[in-house]
Length: 247
Image (tube, rainbow, N blue to C red; front, side):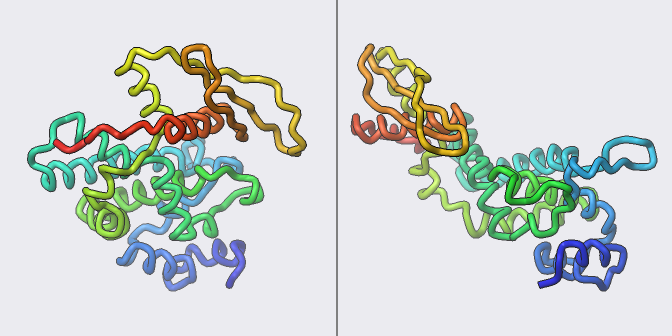
């Protein structure tokens, strides 16, 4: 496999490896390669455009997020004519969840095209989803909404959007646990405590209390992840049932 350096040296050549790799991912020929170059440029490069503005994927990521949301929303609106606003919103959230977008970006191996001064192994998992969103934004700018919609249909909706499976998919055990507590008027509290583990990387230790009783504990590399892990354990420990989301 060619090195990332070699891939980027061929970007200006429409017959080069970058262009050919893009075509395989997109399913069509890109018109303006410079837009896709930006989609794969990390802020660590400190590149700027002719106006002196930062030249990286972050603005395209914002645009791609909006395009994904719009196309997925339109699909669900047509697919589930009886779905109310709350149902459709939950279903869309499951499709465009950070976990799912990271999976899509990882499957397409998009990070191998990333131009960065930071070793890719130092990035967190969200880099995959960020670049995927930026790619969607680049498609919209390069070829317009129809091509953008076709790409999302091919890469997201057809292989991943199964209504029945989505209804049973959990994207946040913490949210479900909180909803359960609110429904049954239970008091809960996530509490960080000291845990001198042997991990080289800093970990957060969390206790989950229900009615002043510790029901689960968890550790993770972030407070958010630790709370989610503790909530998941509580979810199964208490045998909480997922309320039906069917319209």
